[in-house]
Image (cartoon, rainbow, N blue to C red):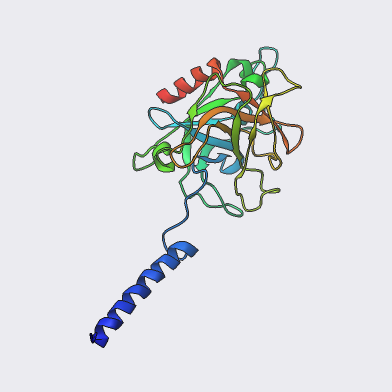
Length: 264
């Protein structure tokens, strides 16, 4: 059977066009991009600068972010509120940039979200108790009326767990300070949590790379593939080295803060 040359050339052109599109999508030349591994996790900013790590938490209105209390409220002492943050600086105007990445000022591919309210336990605010070093923030919708949970993607925000066992497989994700992380990429580690031997009521993991800036990093248990973001059991509080990290497990006090933040 003879096939007209014009038909052959048309078919070849079509194949070339398809391959070109695949090449662009695969190697980054076109609008398609690979999915972000942790779109719900991002940088908590103070006056526009990287301050801590925070993450979207599943909530009825899609407006709640979790972080460490020391990132948003000075530690109290003897029943009196503190005056400055953990590093001696005043806490600035807070915002949240999920999926943050890139050198210098970096990219905010999922927007910057204004924090409208901060909810911290009085055990931290007045007494600086490490076991209450967690906070929940309410963030405002964007100019189009979308919530932060809508933008990071359905099925990406972990549900909170208020009564978790200490021994769990957890995925921890955080953003180290730029000195140790010039490209501002999140670091992650999947390991088992345990009770902290040095401080009762705290959790512990051993994973390198969690420098200053990772405070507030979510500890997510039972995390699977897409649509299985797991359960938030704690947020990173501190640690003596970049590899030794402790976290305040979420409890009934945390639940009260979450519910207040979720009401907006």
